[in-house]
Length: 109
Image 1 (tube, rainbow, N blue to C red):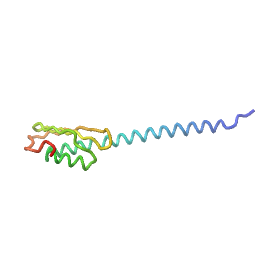
Image 2 (cartoon, helix red, strand yellow):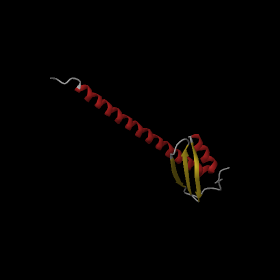
Image 3 (spheres, helix red, strand yellow):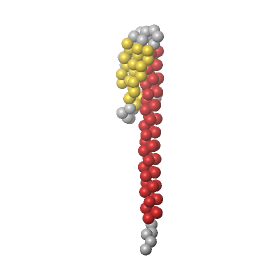
Image 4 (cartoon, helix red, strand yellow):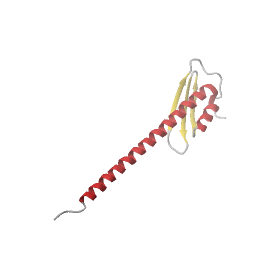
């Protein structure tokens, strides 16, 4: 007596496993892209804060779909934390200037 359909079952299992692996790969890739974007936004906002103050940092972050949650101005060291809207992604960036920052607005308007 021959068993019929056993190859079909094995083929379906292989297809199912392949689909699950593809979904995991896509999810990981999307997460990495989002993390890269929020980190780049934090870097840009920190550079903007170093040259233009809190308002410039908030403007840059807003243009990139994020908001400044914290900005510290400590002499030549500027630290900015941003959070992406609609998600829990946050990133912090720090810029150290060769000379102290000029008198800038360091608080939100």
